[in-house]
Image 1 (cartoon, rainbow, N blue to C red):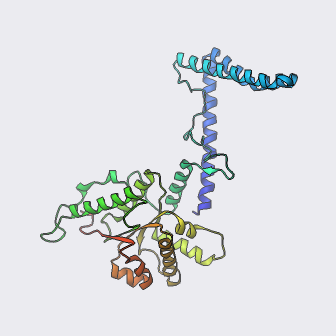
Image 2: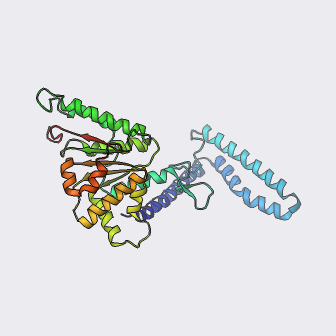
Image 3: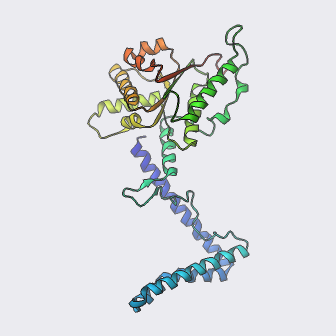
Length: 329
């Protein structure tokens, strides 16, 4: 799913929200009309005010402003009376008001009076969720630091006489949590999680993204396989307008899962991965990578140019997870 596809889908979701809320309001109005004629009479009087105000203003143009003020005061009085009577009859005071999932944008997805309008935070969050779904990234409801269960980690030495896998993994968990809590003012802008499959790298990657987003920042997660598809699309459509590759190059925090599992085409995988990482370093963007590959294997697969970027200890923190596969422990 491209960003444009996600936006079209999201706009449809917001249209459906507004239709749903209007349908629900009409049902509540029908309930009041049937159960409380007195309240409904007040509601009908309020609804008739705009037409009455316009009619009076047209017949007496000199006093149009005074008429409008008087009608506004009457509308406020009716609102107060309707709310009070709703409460008297056991309803919430806003029972006959439109109910929104997001009161900031009133489920329009946009806020402000500027042109173009600015996307609401709820819209941006849902857009990121859709993009993650299309990129094959796990949902945050089960992938966060609060869900970290240390009892699943073997409390046995990684090496004879050494620190236990649990204690070692908890240290790396704390380092990842510190990175997420300090973002964007991290000690080093980038982080790479290395280790064999089943040690929790993808889980920690999602934990970082969830914590960063919970603090109000944007996090873009993508699997390496999906990244390859984006790079291939960019390669074969060089003359296209700004697309997914540019979005990944410019986003504030990019998290790449399973680097090394994507197809390898040197003129695409190596070239565009180098462009992506180098551009992000030059722009001082934050990047977090999870990979099953060791540094020698990363160098063998991606070449000296990419490895030189990943090996820069001033720009990257390196974390190597070790121990038994947690899926079998």
